[in-house]
Amino acid sequence: MRRSRYFLPTLRENPAEAQIASHRLMLRAGMIRQSSAGIYSWLPLGHRVLRKIEQVVREEMNAAGCQEILMPAIQPAELWEESGRYQDYGREMLRITDRHDRPMLFGPTHEEVVTDIFRQSVRSYRDLPQNLYQIQWKFRDELRPRFGIMRGREFYMKDNYSFDIDHAGAVRSYNKMFVAYLRTFARLGLTSIPMQAESGAIGGDYSHEFIVLAYTGESAVYCDRAWLDTDPLAMGIDYEADLQPIVDEWTRLYAATDDKHDPGACTVPEDALYQGRGIEVGHIFYFGTKYSKAMGATVTDPDGVEIAVEMGSYGIGVSRLAGAIIEASHDEAGIIWPEVAAPFKVGLINLRVGDSACDGACEALYARLAEAGVEVLYDDRDERAGVKFAEMELIGLPWQVTVGPRGVKSGTAELKARAGGEAEALSFESVSARLIGG
Ligand code: ATP
Ligand code: MG
Image (cartoon, rainbow, N blue to C red; front, side, top):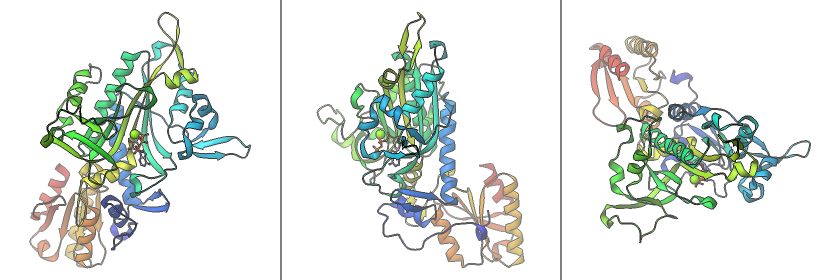
């Protein structure tokens, strides 16, 4: 992509309304623009990031055996009357009336819709288990939308729903999601800690929130510091095997959110206990037959008896993750994208646009990288070097390649990692090899 044509409305000044780094940087880097309170447009740079995050989430869901669907954003109120949640959900639900005076709503979550699909389509235990997911915009009329897309009213969520014949099956499904979530967040470069969370009306310990530690987070959390040295990607996962030992291993260390933390029961010594704040990026939940009973989602078991299916639901805040990654990875100058979520892998800076040697070298490198499938943002504008460098730092692409008249004469360009380290003068050949290779 040529910067001269790219829609990238960056801001020089810090926007007054932004209280936390991710909000400030997303506005300044031209990733998002507010439309109304808690409702945002995603501009090209932000949209690329959202797609990258979504893709990692999708890959991990598919690997865990889930199947992607897409349910309607607008739902009929009837279904929520059936589950008994229409009144309970309260003012966070955006209620709509259509032209025939039918009550509708913009979905804050999809348990009812998916249960309805299930009961229309599945009759026998032989068709279980099932696990369906979607990645879609949700609306919750939050009392206090804030921190940009971190707590929006409209936000992008991956939600999935498992259906099993019995409790043991439901636990297997829950464990798969537990492991898939650990892997997803780790692939995005985040240390996420599964914490016991309030499981609401149903009870049991089958609810975990996945929290990324950040001092700007909204949740107060307590955990064993040993969590910070763990790497979920180090283990090989076979989703067909019994995952209970892995889940046990990953829940052995103490971790609890504020509402579950019990100083009496917490055996972690004071100096090993992290007490701080975190961002909830995911939440998994086992709730048994709550919806299946209320809505008549039953199957026949091997003895021909009709039984209500065991369900769980699982959510990841895809748009919130963009903010969480920035909170975890930025400096004074701007964002530092991990490669998986970066809008482009490389920023190519031409220091002397109009100089035929510089232009020629940049065009050749740009073409070479494009051909190899490396995503490059090429700053081909006739701008001061300082402006270009500042913008590259701000938008935080993992690699910067700088091409100037002096280097070009000796056949070199400078390669620098945004995350730190010295710039290296390398031949154009080595620059491409490095960027294409790794
Ligand atoms: P919270 O406690 O932050 O209000 P929640 O428990 O209501 O979230 P869930 O229903 O568990 O949220 O939704 C699944 C995930 O969706 C959350 O873990 C979070 O990452 C994300 N999410 C929830 N509400 C919002 C929001 N208003 N803006 C952005 N992301 C959100
Ligand atoms: Mg939650």
